[in-house]
Amino acid sequence: MTEAHSEQVESDFQHTMPGAWEIFSVTLLPALLSAIVLIAAAWLPRARASAGPLAIGVAFITGYFSLEKPGFPPQDNFNWLVFLAMLITALATAVALLNAPTWTHWLLSLLLSVALVTRLLWPLLFPTDVASHIRAWTAPAILLTFLSCLSIDTLARQTQSASIPWIMTACAGFSTLALGMSDSQKFGLMSAALTFACLPLIFLASRWQRWNLFRSTPWLFTLLWLGLLINGHFWSNLRLPDALGLIIAPHATWLTEIPPLQRRLKPWQANLLRVALVLIILLAIVTPIAIRFHHDTQVFREDY
Image (tube, rainbow, N blue to C red):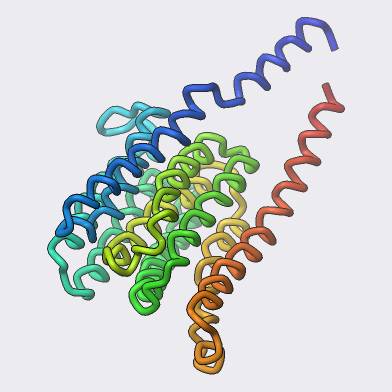
């Protein structure tokens, strides 16, 4: 390999690495914005229930626009996610603020699941070479998105558990790793923004029930999170089994609701078990991805 070629390969490696501004945009910036919204809510008791979805939504959207500045309508279809995030945040904040009945949240989850999946896959539904394959996945993807929202929202309402923000942060965090190591660096950075947007909620875990943060926050997070995974699979190289494994992870927490186990567990034990179950599954999914990534990196370096 010539010296010029070597320098070009090194330049390509450097180009793929996120810069200081990108790292700040998906870590400190969304965490600070989310924290500011939550701190402000402490002084507005009536608005506390809407603080969760507003904090996560605003922080994620700001982090997204710091990385990517899509016009409207966006040229790259995956960038519709940020505009859908605006709609989802506005609706989730409104229904939480108005203390809307549970069926309203579920209806919105259904309608937004249809809008999210259809809009993100729209250009793939018509080309003749891939249309039949993608169309076959559209309905299952919508159903999976809606059922995930329904499951996580119901669990949050039923348990009002302080483990929910930990689980959301863990799911987004491990998805960041999975996307980043699946040639989906851009989506990985966006997932990092979602992770750090959720992070301040961990410090409010003890007030999760008192502030009614279980309203809207779980299903808003689920829609944004699954939007990133849909983009990662259909618009990049996240493998379907890996995406499905990540999606399944938070639903394992329903095991703690089995009556015999539920009666034996104290609240702190149930919380600990929920987080542990999710972490075990996430580790089981991400570890093989990391092994493949390490192998591919070694092969690339040996070739050059």
